[in-house]
Length: 339
Image (cartoon, rainbow, N blue to C red):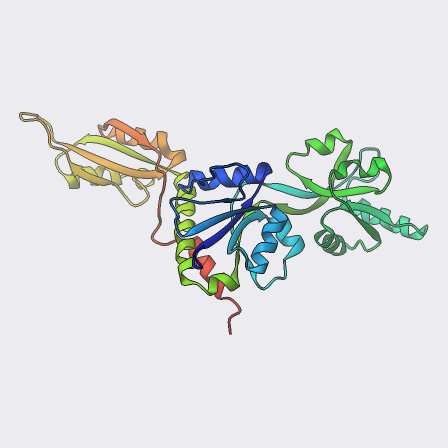
């Protein structure tokens, strides 16, 4: 093992694991894992890196301990277990694995539909010497949320596994659990409370300040990874349009395209002369525009109105900006609090 290799911890199984592997693969960072039972892998396009597979909760621990330099896990796990950690930083939100941590009550509670109703109910429970029992895996974030809502009379029942059965089994009155679509809650006769969204979670890339500060080589490998991911995500917003347009000169074609600035590309058109066949009565020029995806048809119509033909639309794999905003943010996070 090379001491300067970037150690990347990824979820070992489940939807989050599959989505993380696919996310990296689409950005050109395909993972090579010859045996599905292995807990180590490599990324051939990122040779100075190593992949280790862990449970999402353990990924946070490995990054905190410095046994992994970066990792992909859920924001809910970070907020619950490491919000105040000086060593762990959230480098980027990745946009997949989205879900919400919700307070949900039984459908039979027809008089309790909002967080305000729950506050009143907790007081009534307290007045008769009882406590409102809430089953959850997220004691810290749920407790903080309830306190912010002015609810202080409650008992958190820590539970693992399927929490939806807790009210029916009698060991809790309601639950606070993650939900992606709400289907499982509905199927178990539970209803989210209005104003009861505790956090919105998604997959995040986390990093260890300590280990990354110690190695400029790891920072450079991370830069390459972040640049590829950012450019691939940015590319989904754009298409490239190429067309042949008849004109008098490069400047003439440029001027006509730029007459409609909204449809002339993100930085304007690239125009070059085309070698027309001998004896051709017209001069042709090729233009290339990078435009937002939702402007495909309007831009095509603009080029067609200028006499454009042979219009080709392609989707780029990467669109790199003049600098990487993600890496810039990483560097600010890495050096925050120094000294």
